[in-house]
Length: 590
Image 1 (cartoon, rainbow, N blue to C red):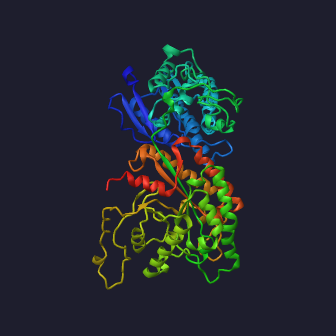
Image 2 (cartoon, rainbow, N blue to C red):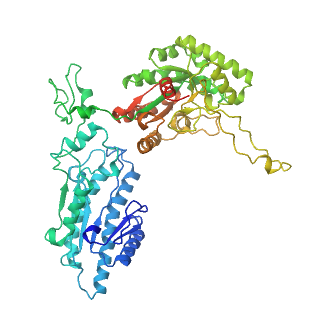
Image 3 (tube, rainbow, N blue to C red):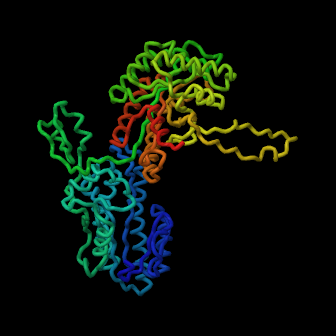
């Protein structure tokens, strides 16, 4: 618009720094969901350029990393979307028109020329969009409700004033960068339903907005919504991964961009789609699903208490006799039983030999988790040496090969433990969290000592930084992160004799926390394209316990979480810890 002679004020919640300076361009910063903020920004624009004649209300946020059914949408997401998209648009229009009223009053009542509003709607408001009802419903309200209501009111303020909306389909902007990188997603969302077989460029939408803003070009158009979507016919309702699993084994299927609900089973091949869409995205996201089979040992080591009794130990027996079979059945249902890593204390291997053998027969990886779930702080170095040696022996007897992974009970890892693990040829540890979503080499540095703040000691004695870690060697362990917030037991298991026991947290809260972490990491890794994981992916560890996730009210949540992760498509891969560590280490240059 500055190129067409207009004086433009651009508004955003962040400072606008990526636009070339132009004397006809002014920028303001504020929150459109706040009335005081938008009132101030419009006042600044008017003060800088004079009366405002045209408003382009381009508010719109959505969370493309989520896809919630209407019965699963968090209230916070609904409110955040509506606060920006609906309330923000309303407030912008309100104070734009108040500003116009003031300008006309100051000019003796003479009407402003070319008073026009253009609202950004969306084709989702026309067709709807599964998984994004909070966005689609709001846009529908703007482009069909608000626009048509306001058109009948603004003429009372200015006899030639108009308001219209533009409803774009997909537009190639940084907001969706990476969203359509997957050729199959591009095909189903932006090509298979669009006659022009492409997505819009920002200029396509901007030119339509300029047309609607101009009294000369569109002076007799008001209350309308113009689609800028390449002729989009609608949106895909059933995607291939929702229909193909229901087909018979004999079904011959190549691939299909659009599958109707009426075709759950077919007797002949579906149409081919272009070969170009068969190339998956390079990014790899590895789900590290693990199970700590602590059972009774959890009450003997780190959970030891003089008050422990038969009722407490009973939950350990439940872990082996009920929890283990339930989890194995669940993993088999999802086809991932051989992609799970079980960290089993030696005590559980010997106390529950049948269940331990069931885990081996599932194809899962077996890793070590102490003997009696003893913490490193409970043992002398000699005792810990004996424990690690015994755990290696038991695991080798159970599986026929030496274990490659270790998780310290209660994550209590110390420098001596690391030395022992290196001596026994372990490949990886999973006890620390220097990073929450990337493998890394376990740092090697002297033990961190607490500061002695005794009055007789000078502060000079402790004001020292930590020494840097020494470079990794061929023996250095790969660290696969563990995290208190990515396990089930801490919030969902009740221990009467533990001071910080919880156990009555709703399972929905935990699932929402896990999903929130995944969705943030998904978006973050796509932005950073980290070199640590292939193609900028990440690892997503989850730690389950049979005594917790085996409980009737928890295992259903675990079932849903696995389905949720699998629903992200071909980027997602359930991987055993050993395979992840070996692959990652193979890419490092040491």
